[in-house]
Length: 187
Image 1 (tube, rainbow, N blue to C red):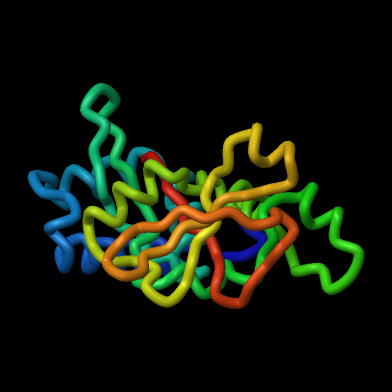
Image 2: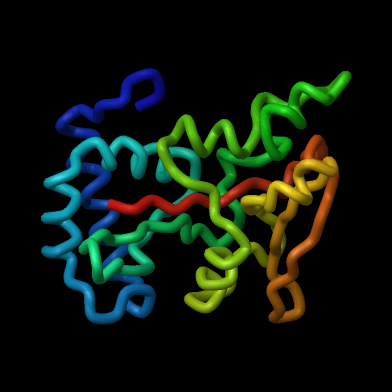
Protein backbone atom coordinates (compact mmCIF):
# COMPACT_ATOMS: atom_id res chain seq x y z
CA UNK A 1 0.00 0.00 0.00
CA UNK A 2 2.78 2.53 0.66
CA UNK A 3 3.58 4.69 -2.38
CA UNK A 4 0.24 4.26 -4.12
CA UNK A 5 -3.07 5.77 -3.09
CA UNK A 6 -5.00 2.87 -4.56
CA UNK A 7 -5.51 -0.61 -3.23
CA UNK A 8 -5.31 -3.67 -5.42
CA UNK A 9 -8.47 -5.78 -5.60
CA UNK A 10 -6.83 -8.32 -3.27
CA UNK A 11 -5.83 -5.63 -0.74
CA UNK A 12 -9.31 -4.10 -0.92
CA UNK A 13 -11.09 -7.37 -0.22
CA UNK A 14 -8.68 -8.29 2.58
CA UNK A 15 -9.16 -4.88 4.22
CA UNK A 16 -12.95 -5.05 3.91
CA UNK A 17 -12.94 -8.53 5.46
CA UNK A 18 -10.78 -7.29 8.35
CA UNK A 19 -13.02 -4.27 8.92
CA UNK A 20 -16.15 -6.42 8.83
CA UNK A 21 -14.69 -8.95 11.28
CA UNK A 22 -13.70 -6.15 13.68
CA UNK A 23 -17.09 -4.45 13.27
CA UNK A 24 -18.93 -7.68 14.11
CA UNK A 25 -16.61 -8.52 17.02
CA UNK A 26 -17.17 -5.13 18.69
CA UNK A 27 -20.85 -4.29 18.23
CA UNK A 28 -20.77 -2.31 21.51
CA UNK A 29 -18.81 0.41 19.69
CA UNK A 30 -21.54 1.08 17.13
CA UNK A 31 -24.92 0.04 18.49
CA UNK A 32 -27.72 0.30 15.97
CA UNK A 33 -25.44 0.25 12.90
CA UNK A 34 -25.41 -2.58 10.40
CA UNK A 35 -22.37 -3.67 8.42
CA UNK A 36 -24.34 -3.54 5.15
CA UNK A 37 -24.84 0.23 5.58
CA UNK A 38 -21.14 0.73 6.43
CA UNK A 39 -20.09 -1.41 3.46
CA UNK A 40 -22.35 0.57 1.11
CA UNK A 41 -20.78 3.79 2.39
CA UNK A 42 -17.27 2.38 1.83
CA UNK A 43 -18.18 1.12 -1.65
CA UNK A 44 -19.39 4.60 -2.62
CA UNK A 45 -16.14 6.24 -1.42
CA UNK A 46 -13.30 3.99 -2.56
CA UNK A 47 -10.68 6.69 -1.91
CA UNK A 48 -11.37 6.43 1.81
CA UNK A 49 -10.39 2.75 1.75
CA UNK A 50 -6.77 3.68 1.09
CA UNK A 51 -6.74 5.85 4.22
CA UNK A 52 -8.34 3.06 6.25
CA UNK A 53 -5.71 0.73 4.81
CA UNK A 54 -2.98 3.04 6.07
CA UNK A 55 -4.62 3.20 9.49
CA UNK A 56 -4.69 -0.60 9.53
CA UNK A 57 -1.15 -1.03 8.13
CA UNK A 58 0.31 1.16 10.87
CA UNK A 59 -1.43 -0.77 13.66
CA UNK A 60 -4.50 1.40 14.31
CA UNK A 61 -7.17 -1.29 14.03
CA UNK A 62 -9.82 1.19 12.80
CA UNK A 63 -13.44 0.53 13.69
CA UNK A 64 -16.72 2.42 13.35
CA UNK A 65 -17.50 4.43 16.47
CA UNK A 66 -20.14 6.90 15.31
CA UNK A 67 -22.67 7.86 12.65
CA UNK A 68 -23.16 11.50 11.69
CA UNK A 69 -26.92 11.52 11.25
CA UNK A 70 -27.05 14.78 9.27
CA UNK A 71 -24.67 13.54 6.58
CA UNK A 72 -24.84 9.76 6.87
CA UNK A 73 -21.08 9.63 7.39
CA UNK A 74 -19.66 6.81 9.46
CA UNK A 75 -16.71 7.67 11.68
CA UNK A 76 -13.80 5.25 11.98
CA UNK A 77 -11.29 5.67 14.82
CA UNK A 78 -8.14 3.76 15.70
CA UNK A 79 -9.27 1.21 18.30
CA UNK A 80 -5.99 -0.63 18.93
CA UNK A 81 -5.55 -1.37 22.63
CA UNK A 82 -2.31 0.62 22.71
CA UNK A 83 -1.18 3.57 20.60
CA UNK A 84 -0.64 2.24 17.05
CA UNK A 85 2.76 0.54 16.91
CA UNK A 86 3.59 1.85 13.43
CA UNK A 87 3.08 5.45 14.53
CA UNK A 88 5.33 5.87 17.55
CA UNK A 89 8.56 7.75 18.23
CA UNK A 90 7.33 10.85 16.42
CA UNK A 91 7.43 14.46 17.53
CA UNK A 92 4.23 16.48 17.26
CA UNK A 93 4.51 18.43 13.97
CA UNK A 94 6.93 19.62 11.25
CA UNK A 95 7.95 22.74 13.21
CA UNK A 96 8.91 20.55 16.16
CA UNK A 97 10.82 18.16 13.90
CA UNK A 98 12.69 21.06 12.29
CA UNK A 99 13.52 22.50 15.74
CA UNK A 100 15.38 19.36 16.82
CA UNK A 101 19.11 19.78 16.45
CA UNK A 102 20.01 16.08 16.74
CA UNK A 103 18.43 12.65 17.13
CA UNK A 104 15.53 13.62 14.90
CA UNK A 105 12.69 11.10 14.65
CA UNK A 106 11.63 9.84 11.22
CA UNK A 107 8.60 12.15 11.01
CA UNK A 108 5.92 13.93 13.00
CA UNK A 109 2.45 12.86 14.11
CA UNK A 110 0.62 15.66 12.30
CA UNK A 111 2.48 15.04 9.03
CA UNK A 112 1.92 11.30 9.17
CA UNK A 113 -1.81 11.72 9.86
CA UNK A 114 -2.12 14.12 6.91
CA UNK A 115 -0.19 11.74 4.64
CA UNK A 116 -2.62 8.99 5.61
CA UNK A 117 -5.58 11.21 4.71
CA UNK A 118 -6.90 11.05 8.28
CA UNK A 119 -7.28 13.46 11.21
CA UNK A 120 -5.47 13.17 14.50
CA UNK A 121 -7.87 12.86 17.43
CA UNK A 122 -8.36 15.88 19.65
CA UNK A 123 -8.90 15.69 23.41
CA UNK A 124 -12.69 15.38 23.01
CA UNK A 125 -12.43 12.57 20.47
CA UNK A 126 -9.90 10.80 22.65
CA UNK A 127 -12.20 11.01 25.66
CA UNK A 128 -15.15 9.70 23.57
CA UNK A 129 -13.00 6.76 22.43
CA UNK A 130 -12.20 5.95 26.06
CA UNK A 131 -15.94 5.64 26.75
CA UNK A 132 -15.96 2.64 24.38
CA UNK A 133 -13.15 0.72 26.07
CA UNK A 134 -9.82 1.00 27.81
CA UNK A 135 -7.11 2.28 25.48
CA UNK A 136 -3.49 3.37 26.02
CA UNK A 137 -3.04 1.66 29.39
CA UNK A 138 0.73 1.36 28.78
CA UNK A 139 1.25 3.86 25.95
CA UNK A 140 0.19 7.44 25.23
CA UNK A 141 -1.08 9.30 22.18
CA UNK A 142 -0.44 12.80 20.86
CA UNK A 143 -3.72 14.72 20.36
CA UNK A 144 -4.50 17.84 18.33
CA UNK A 145 -3.24 20.77 20.32
CA UNK A 146 -4.82 24.23 20.50
CA UNK A 147 -2.80 26.89 18.64
CA UNK A 148 -2.26 28.95 21.80
CA UNK A 149 -0.42 26.03 23.42
CA UNK A 150 1.43 25.04 20.27
CA UNK A 151 2.61 28.64 19.70
CA UNK A 152 4.34 28.49 23.07
CA UNK A 153 6.18 25.28 22.09
CA UNK A 154 3.94 22.75 23.79
CA UNK A 155 1.76 19.89 22.62
CA UNK A 156 -0.81 17.68 24.33
CA UNK A 157 -0.96 13.93 24.75
CA UNK A 158 -3.32 11.58 26.56
CA UNK A 159 -3.36 8.15 28.15
CA UNK A 160 -5.39 6.04 30.53
CA UNK A 161 -4.00 5.22 33.96
CA UNK A 162 -5.75 4.29 37.21
CA UNK A 163 -8.99 3.90 35.25
CA UNK A 164 -8.83 7.63 34.44
CA UNK A 165 -8.10 9.49 31.19
CA UNK A 166 -5.31 12.01 31.64
CA UNK A 167 -4.35 14.95 29.43
CA UNK A 168 -0.72 16.06 29.70
CA UNK A 169 1.68 18.44 28.01
CA UNK A 170 5.19 18.10 26.66
CA UNK A 171 7.51 20.00 24.40
CA UNK A 172 6.28 19.37 20.86
CA UNK A 173 9.77 18.30 19.76
CA UNK A 174 9.86 15.41 22.26
CA UNK A 175 9.25 11.84 21.20
CA UNK A 176 9.02 8.52 23.00
CA UNK A 177 8.94 4.86 22.01
CA UNK A 178 5.59 4.44 23.78
CA UNK A 179 3.90 7.56 22.36
CA UNK A 180 2.11 7.56 19.04
CA UNK A 181 -1.16 9.06 17.83
CA UNK A 182 -4.67 7.96 16.95
CA UNK A 183 -6.69 8.98 13.89
CA UNK A 184 -10.29 9.37 12.90
CA UNK A 185 -11.72 9.21 9.41
CA UNK A 186 -15.19 10.17 8.24
CA UNK A 187 -16.50 8.07 5.35
